[in-house]
Image 1 (cartoon, rainbow, N blue to C red):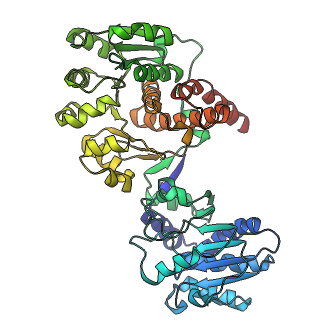
Image 2 (tube, helix red, strand yellow):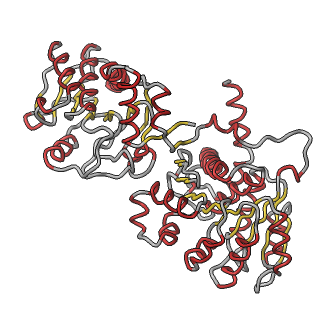
Image 3 (cartoon, helix red, strand yellow):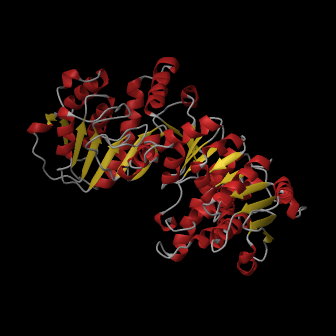
Length: 507
């Protein structure tokens, strides 16, 4: 697990390190610049020319220090500034003085005529950008877009990108490599900011763990090493050991979604999966997934007593895949939400019912996990799609906090907001997963983990991560275009074990 921080949290880490712990800012700056210089040196090749573009803050000072180091490595270096250096920070002035002593003299970008360039270092803005880029800086970033270079390396994050939301704040630098310091920023983990970062390098600039803890970052992401959190499978066990998942969905002619959720729950390790669906789907389920128990119900809905028993016996319920969008579907959603004592994953048509009949939120308990995509989230929150896309972290967190539930907001970088205030931003997955049915698989994955006893927030976050990892594995085996949703479920069955072996070997 690694933390993701906002711009203000990173500033607090920096302040705490300097003022409370006593590590001088110039020491941190030298380490940061060394990391940037190392990447630039490798990208430029022997003697490759470098242009360093610096703003007037400490991000610019990092770029100046890196330029000085690169000259010592034998690179021809040009240094361009956004404005009057007398208006810069004290650290920038000091770095410029050191650079000048070594024969590196800056030019204003308006007077600079670019020559050959292998690497362009972007040190214009750091984590403090909180308003649209305008005026002189806007001209500077436009100028940088005209510089021909083989590789663009951003210092901390690409200039023009918000560290908090990933929003593009006007003209922005599109980097091939981003060297960020201490902790990854939220703005580099979500889109559109993530698409401007290129390869992300997290460099150790010397921030102590105490400084990170003092900033109290709530956002995090998982890596392969976190697979160890999967529920154990003791030798002396039986199907009841690993829980029972009830998938409620799959109306007439809509069996596919429920099948995918049920298959994924089994692949994720659930001991038994039951599918509550219409009789017309029996042959489909028994053919495609004979391991599942098919429980029929009439179009008018299952009997109240029978439904209560099913919900009471289930370790987790996946509600909504292929459920339909009529009044009967909404009635079933109400009945399950008002009856189930176990965790409920509310997905697909279940979310549609929620958006139409908002009073259903009155049946929410703390063990509810919702899994909307962007448009479904807009319907639930009664705001525009553009508002959700502008800040998905804020949207998911606000809904989770309002109702005391866990919200899985699906996107290329899925956000999981927990009722306790935790924020998970996913880093796994690939475009091969952009196929119908992928969301149904995710609902089944989370349901399978919940059935095995994981807490809802952890099950949601780890489920999203494993779902993405299975997508990557399926794409590697089948190709980006050929992956189907059922493949995601099937690769869940082998990929976690492969990761466990790899982590164990590395340890």
